[in-house]
Length: 350
Ligand SMILES: Cc1ncc(COP(=O)(O)O)c(C=O)c1O
Image (tube, rainbow, N blue to C red; front, top):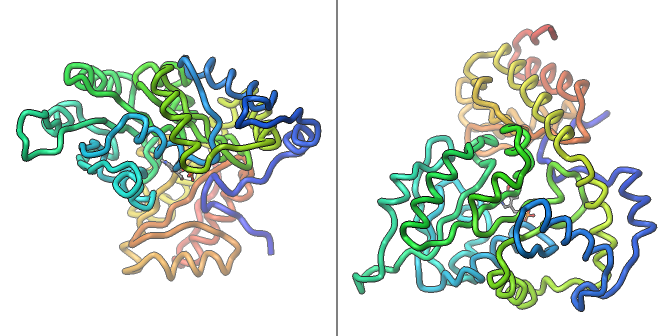
């Protein structure tokens, strides 16, 4: 049986062009600055983000952690959106390793409000409080179904951060998805952050890695933090090479993923209007709520799996993520499986 894998945009396998680039990559000791392929990728990272320096790191969680350490959050608070990945899904590294205290603020569909951020900031005058050290944003926002913060929303929070003398960190695991949705280059989003990283192994389809970028002194501290965390890599050109392939023309790939997600969302809404509000789907994540049909989404996800459709589930939500290795036929298969599992007619395409 063919599987249709919507669990995450991390499940992609390297394309033939990526495999060819891996085979021909020029290599050296990256931790010594000797790997020409990594150096080329980091130069491209500087150009794409518009920052002084960029560093190739093994994972997004390490990029976040190194950024927290380089922003010196130990003993202070870090303002995060309450559904943020850095707060909920990184093993508590924010506190355990970086020594910060998370200060969650609930946004509207993952989008923080500038006034709410202003109110959450704590100064150093009151000795009973842990002063705010950093504000974190996530764009697009994973848990909210890939929702995008606009440039204006980011700019408003940057103003609040500047007024309070605080740095702003951007978790850009899906930065290209946000940029493709807003129809701007990622540089425009990076302008509103002091530090930023984007994943290479999600919508871009590479096997491993992320690029963390920021201004020079921050990046010196971040480079040290990455070494401390065990992220110093050697012949890492092997995994940097596919990233150079993926970054040649990333926006159309993401737009295609978004179109597939929109098609999936419309189809699910046609099966039953309670499953998805198709108008809220902006990028490549479709959160499908099955409360009307089951107390827990696990049984429905298991029934989908029996029909070859793989998707993550949590509480009453099934999450479908589109990526470069699913296509219209996979979307049609997912819709047919969902209609069969819920015993509903599937929507005719058109
Ligand atoms: C928003 C967000 N931030 C950070 C991460 C962590 O990235 P990685 O899996 O590369 O460690 C993820 C992973 O899915 C994510 O979705």
